Figure (cartoon, rainbow, N blue to C red):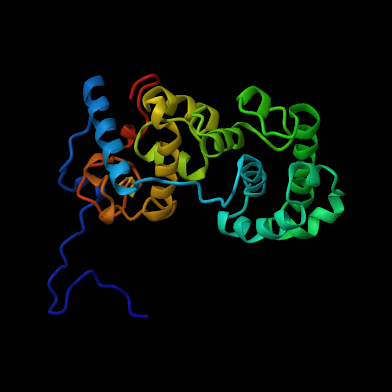
Amino acid sequence: MAQDSGKNVGGKPRPKRKSVAERKPVGKQPRTKREREERFVEIQRILTKTYPNPVCALHHRNAWELLVATILSAQCTDERVNMVTPALFAKYPTVEALAAAEIEDVVPLIRSTGFFNNKAKNIVGAARRIVESFGGEVPRTMEELLTVPGAARKTANVVLGSGYGIPSGVVVDTHVQRVARRLAFTGEVDPVKIERDLMAIVPQDHWIDFSHELILHGRALCFARKPNCAACPLDALCFAADKTSTEVTVEKQAAKPPKGKR
Ligand code: SF4
């Protein structure tokens, strides 16, 4: 392949492409608490308008099926889980049925979701725990759910939020982690600390939808590699250090807000 000479046809030097930091700003970075609050309200308004009535991508008919699907979704796509659960629930239609199952009989049904031995152990263990300790009904509190095998805080938030409509916290998956950091809602990397920061700035009645919106935004535009900033409705309000094609001035420190501030 020919070497790029840095010149156009005719020998004229090609204009140097501006670095991200040199591009003309069109948005105003928030400096005060009030500006950060106004920015957050505007981002929330845009997300709600862009992703109206968001729903959980995991197919389920009740909180029990959602709990199982969420456990299976670890290190696996929601699409793959949705391909697996119909046959699983056809063979084991109730909590009691799965509680009575042999783990080795469950493994073939969930094999394609990965980590199948552990997941089979967890979903059968969860069924047994729910039958023995909660009368066969998925519990409705974070404290109780955390005693169920396979249910850590994220899973419990999914089940309580999308299964029962209880805003117990903000679901923090990889999309939420990435988008929340890019939008400077948090400077943390630990999901528990990210959730704490989000719970401090998002009104509780929006916790359930807000995590769905960030997940949908992460899937639609704010990709891990090369986010599609040119098409993003939040472009003017986002100052992420790894933005792609954009007109907004980027300041790396904007991705790390002072602790306790929006
Ligand atoms: S502007 Fe880019 S980095 Fe910022 S939220 Fe949108 S897609 Fe993500």
